[in-house]
Image (cartoon, rainbow, N blue to C red; front, side, top):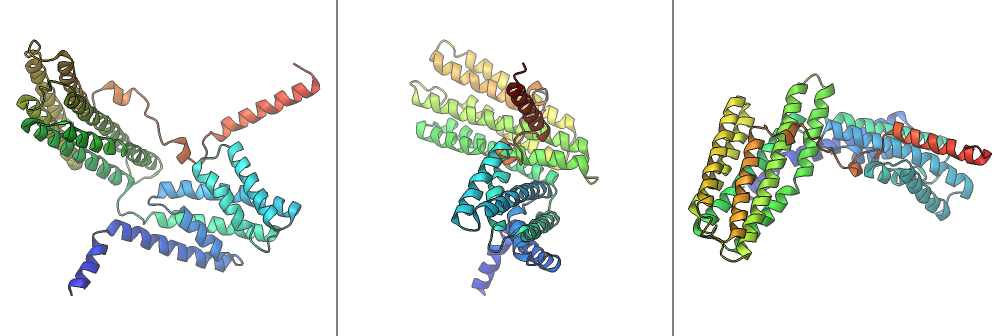
Length: 397
């Protein structure tokens, strides 16, 4: 009975993962059935494409599916041309992969589609290839990608908005926990080894920013076409994501400042009760903001939290300046910089800083997109090059 409970607990503790693999398995099986039913020997290709395309959200699966379709269309064309020229064999395989890579680079396909092009080309170039077979495998790819898109809707129990809120809450709580740990260390007296641990945790938090940004962007784009979400709410949540991103950066900077102070001489911040209390208040303010986001509370309450944190930072600044004649100047500058970090965190709490709304935040990295360059922009470039080529050929300026 104990072994049975432990086995069951392994799955209940990983509900999200179990749900995703169950949906992926069902989607691949369905793609195989549909592919084999409607297309001659199309089940295997459809199942492979479905397994490659399905992701944890509808938005991501649509993008992956589009990448698969683009890759298959290009790969099938190149594969047919290679087999026609060299017949089926190692030369045609090498030529297919080489040409696919060149074409993918020339079209500025992103990382997703660039990988899909040679992979799907090799699927198409399988034994017995012909024009008819290539068309069948291309159709199977469409079936697999379409099945993945449909099933991806069930891969996650929450909406993109809900997943964004969960990520913001998680990162906010981790920031607050790190600040609380820093405050406790300062209160009892810390050394460089302690500050090094805080800085390491801050760097780990920084690595989560691209994931948060991608999730917030997904929620924003999902709200544009889904009648189930309000676009204004998604835009507001996106700004909250940018705000927590700025908070993470400030927390990491504070950890770096404390580390620099620890490795230098005369670290008066170690054992400084006023500084420890201010950082602890900053931690509490972030936790309160997270609670308000989860409860969708009034904006005035968040403004009060930010106002209180600004008062705390000003009191700390007065306390530090009072010690200006008795402490090392470099150490004092480091301590005052912590006041600036807390004020920026306060600006992120009430989202009042122009840096959050007036400065455009980059989206996903180009390597994660299907097309790194807009197709219309690519068309203009190629048209310009063709015109220049014919002008040079005819000797016209």
